Length: 127
Image 1 (tube, rainbow, N blue to C red):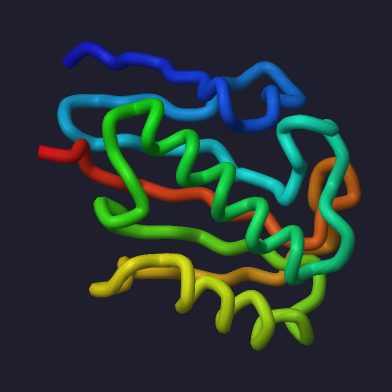
Image 2: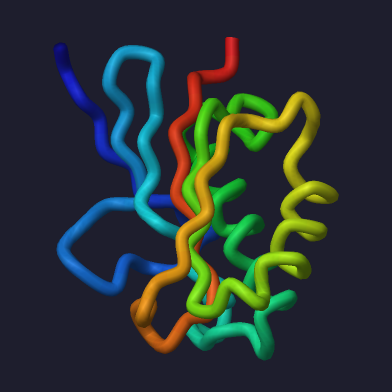
């Protein structure tokens, strides 16, 4: 089965040797998206702003690959501090369309670029 790589114009450039997303068949697998503003290249201030920006970046990546937030199947949310989960969860619930996808949330010791939250996803192509 062929795979196709995508890099979104409206998301921050990758900060390592990876692409934003890979499509295999009708499935799209994204790299983790941090709360980096694609215009400034800097992290948004605070966990709430970073969560919103990470979701906006994820949306841009999915749209570039022919999908969208409404096509999510599974997400993984990484937080630097589980105490931030209630704020991230509230924003996630507001910005991800229902029915919500399956999800995991994991506290990690550190995230790239000093991020406070990172979100990766699996989605299907929009039909």
